[in-house]
Length: 122
Image (cartoon, rainbow, N blue to C red; front, top):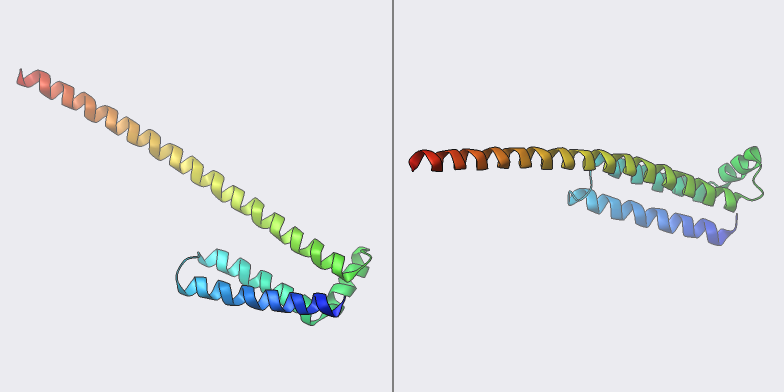
């Protein structure tokens, strides 16, 4: 792995750590999201500081270079993250749909009660 890639990995992972910690202090991220990004940036930092890990894993899997392994590792983790976010979004969409249906039912009952009360007063 080239020294430029190692330096880039270290700088980017440290910047990501600082950014995530700032967002956590401002309460702009949920704890589970913060944990994912902290572990993600720590993993990138470890691969940048200790390239022998990436070289070993690349040889173990059969990838030609450690740089390709690093990119594959990052892409794999981000795909998993996108999948987990899609699961969360699907659950939230289901909850929103149920809430809209409940509100529509309650509004319909309220309208019926108003119509009945106006008929009684006449």
